[in-house]
Image (cartoon, rainbow, N blue to C red):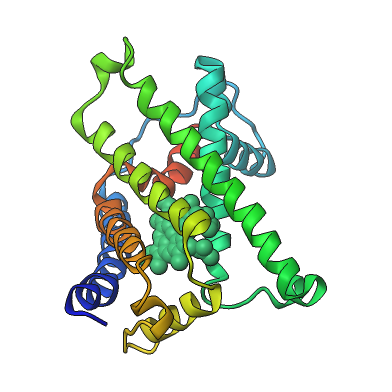
Length: 240
Ligand code: HEM
């Protein structure tokens, strides 16, 4: 590994994971320390039973009906963004371990095709959703309410996606080689196999990992922390 790749796709990955985990834990600790409101903050309609509250929590947290009521077009792209995010997360798990059940059923070539179609679709859906959300912020009244962080965050995510899609559609590196790199990270001995070290795609991978690291470091201190806080917020919305 050249020194720059070692720093960015090695050392910085550990720093990013540590900041992400400790930062998120710290934010949750801070929330627990806030004095609880003595006023019930539930909004109508409020389910009476615990089961009803649980159901509403899941519905509000994963399907955001409150967003659909305000802006149906935005709701569709927000839903696609979150579904795509889950899809990308699941797809990246293949970099750790092969999904043997599917791979055995499809064979090597079939699995490569399957990954190309699913990964490719997820990457494009994410890119389109984020592009919509960026463009939306250039229009009033959203433009007037937006702060620089709103643009910065969306642009950072878009750059990660463009680089990821470049790896997916134009890269010349096989998943087994990516897996070798990820396993070296897990063994605390970061290294690129020859196929990555000698490919020009290496710089796209290093840039993808660099921007992803920045996102992980920023996560606990940005509005992205809503991915964790939304559950508590939505539970409070049904307090009786
Ligand atoms: C350090 C963390 C990350 C690593 C090591 C990583 C690595 C990779 C690799 C190796 C690929 C190419 C897969 C292939 O062609 O077989 C890829 C693709 C992709 N990545 Fe990442 N990635 C990371 C974080 C992220 C994040 C945070 C996002 C989203 C915000 C993301 C979004 C994508 C997308 C959309 C693709 C293309 C679709 C796909 O192949 O699944 N990645 N990534």
